[in-house]
Length: 584
Image 1 (cartoon, rainbow, N blue to C red):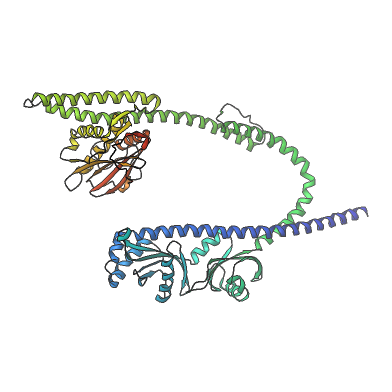
Image 2 (tube, one colour):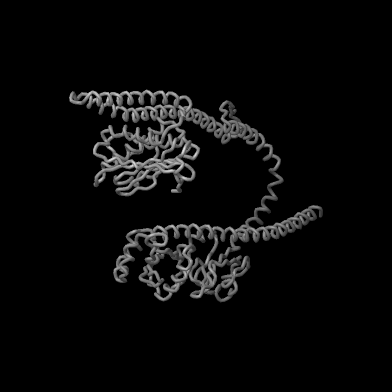
């Protein structure tokens, strides 16, 4: 009797426990599904936002293509239709169109079955009215998201409209599947209450369309339904309100209860099984875990914390289960390897610093040696008058002095970094001396050096270092000008800004190759030069930034490449009273 009573008590307690678990799990499942629904909509929003940003960038890039603008200036529909296909292929999108400045559709292209011209034309009118935001439209059962940009020529009051370019992608089965996989739910896109595309089977689409009209026509945060005999939690969000040419666009996400129901069934079985074995093995399991896992793991955690703080000294004893001992041995190997790697990295960094320093010395010494060598050649000519010999000798002395100053600066730099010897200096005199030095370089022969009148200002700079930076820019410009097809020329001009000073060096060369524009100011970057190791621009940028300024590529095109130095206003000590500050 007592055994039966105990059995009945255990049975009742088990039933009560299972009922409580079921109710709790049901609530938790619904809460988790609602949370998943919100995450699903957020996932689609993020995915769509990424696609929209990409679409806006693509349409913006297409609108800046000179060849596309040139095509639209023909105003010939047949020519635009024939040549537009190449730009469609270039965009790589499923939809592409060109419109006149009045918004009339010239030509359009789409992947798959052809679209109705009238529906496309209506959608494009709405898209060009709001070019900063993509637009959804439906044509012949296909849903597209498009973005339009204006094609213009000129700027300001002289700007002329050439038309519009529109590009877009299809919200098709592939996109729906991507959203479904990312959200782990079924999704459908609905336009004006009609399902256009989605991941639901056709039979379930028809059932959803016939029984859930409100869900397909207005936003609903959460609603439970049955489709095909299975429970779903559904939510809908409006992607685009109703427009004059089309109905509202909705996204409907459906999360199935099926997986949660399977989990609940398995949980019921596990609860019964665990209730039987938990009491038998609980105490023994706890003692075993404490002896074989917990203590060794605490030792591992302590050693890991010490390692994260840079302390390699703590040792780990191999104890506990075999897996824990293997983990301890792996940790010891990792710590030894990390210590060795750290030492190797420090050694490699020292060697790299030495190599860069040696390259920098070689690069700058070559500048001075070129001037000394050229003047020495002139001195060897017995027909040169004595006065000119004195001037040439003075240039040689200046070159030797420059090399000495550079080596002295290098020694200081090796200890404390670049130390500027700031002093007042006439900007015109500084540029004039730099031009005089560059004229004697072999790469400057045959290059017309143009000096735009320099503002009569005094600047507080390190003259030798700033001359070196400007010299590097002029030398690069001369080398580039010699590679151009036109008569080579290099110009330098300076102007006062409202917040400082600007110095610009231009050349008639072919421009900076696109392959190195992003890394142009990094050390050892060079292309198209017969000599040099690619340190000139890196050193120039380093010197200018040490003065608190900046060096950048202002523009690069065939026959007009410009590098600009900007110095802050604190470097200007004196301005001419009649000089007007201008903003460039």
